[in-house]
View 1 (cartoon, rainbow, N blue to C red):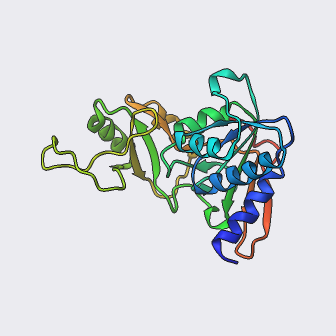
View 2: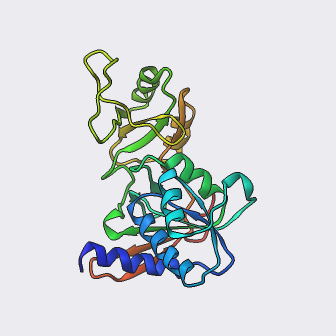
Length: 245
């Protein structure tokens, strides 16, 4: 089965988790956007839900599809959040952030009574850090010093730049323009290799001055919906004793 058909099957299964009247956390990235499109079709057919977007891009898409939106600050709790991930380990801990929205995604996820991840089976790993860098959002002021502090933790940070290869005419040598998050910050993509102690690394990174947030989502997901190569969608649920954030 081709990737588009797999994504469509996954989106339909994820949308089946939604019940009328729910307030939803709407994720970001290509897989989450497929779910948003499926929800938009169901809203057009009469499903009554509202959503809190986790990025400006998702907000724009949801508005185009006619999904009613609310701001995170205007709701006490969200019934359900659906989002994608870059890596998923056997405990259902995650690395997120390839799209750069992980700060907003984490804030939305923390407000959700249930948090469901949707992903292709290729995103399953034995250890986080095996196939994707760990993104860390930092304030622009003192960014190089923040990067040095992350290096002291054993990380290998690299500044994320805009994908259009724009260059800053005011910077020495016309350096590439940094990618800027919806909160106006920069992202350091950190090569880490397989992580042996995910909670400890998450705590250490968050304690670094200049760091706003990181892409480790520890204990967030109650369920992961995984689509295999043949289009079969499987549900992986967090085991007893693994809950917590």
